Length: 417
View (cartoon, rainbow, N blue to C red):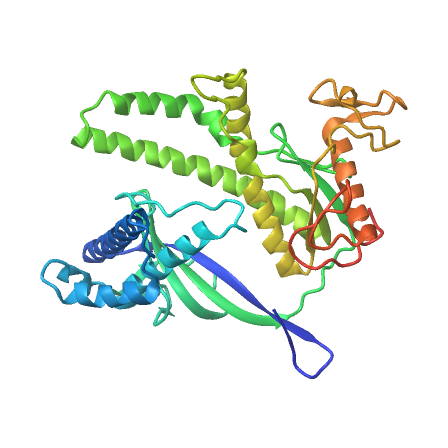
């Protein structure tokens, strides 16, 4: 959002989250578990009521009605334990559920789905919308007190909210801040097209390549071995819990390695390019199962499952998400184009045919004889499609048979390539 201050300059508001690992005392850990448990209980109970109302063809309870019932439950003998939790934490839970139902009913949402029940130990978290402050290396959380945390960097901006979450055996706090800065102007004038792949994370139109870490592929055998050990243990026994903790740590290691590689790549790309053109890939659709049904089974199921794992291991959507906000912070732009035929089209003469790409790695045009790395050729086509969007002024949708945009308003593309 831009604000005009009466002078020849614009300002914009930056929302930024800082995540730190907490070092709570034993009593504070117990409070965290109670807060997360009460939030989970309230979510599941209200979700159950609303799903039953939908089954009975009745309107669901929206936030105001749910908050009224919450007040009564906190005064009752059966649900009086909810009063031990800070009131706004439970109110934020009801708001999140209300938003989840709204998204589930919204036909414009491409990935809409109904809210789901929450399980103990999975994504435990709760949020404080206000009254949070930082004092040195301690953060004050209402009804919990001052909690030590590992402050790895200074916090800039006005604190808007704080979310406490559990990951494995550790608790973390994510502090959301807001600050107003002058509208940034990107220091570079370069523009690039990027092809995302399963062999390399990103290939740029100038030939630069960013390799993905592929942590799941590297640790798949170890993960499978640890999961077999878990299957042989008595469920909920002490040894079963210890083994499950080992698997959780391994999953965290995989996620951290993937996220680290994506952050390094997106930071370098964002710093060096004012405009970035990407394919508008629908990762959820591309990684759908190929099993089919009993009556109509599909073919090449094992190959499709391997391709799905490779796509998810690369983190295509996270790559786009990080580029989008980093470009916004630096004054750059990300353009999404129609991915149709970007890998089959010759970047030299424009001839399009699937026979041009007979192998995964090499592109060879059957019309003009142009040969090139297939990913580099696709990246050049993606860049050309970005220029086509600018020429056709295809703001808000795909230009005829060629390319498109989604997101921010278009700006003129730099001429440098």
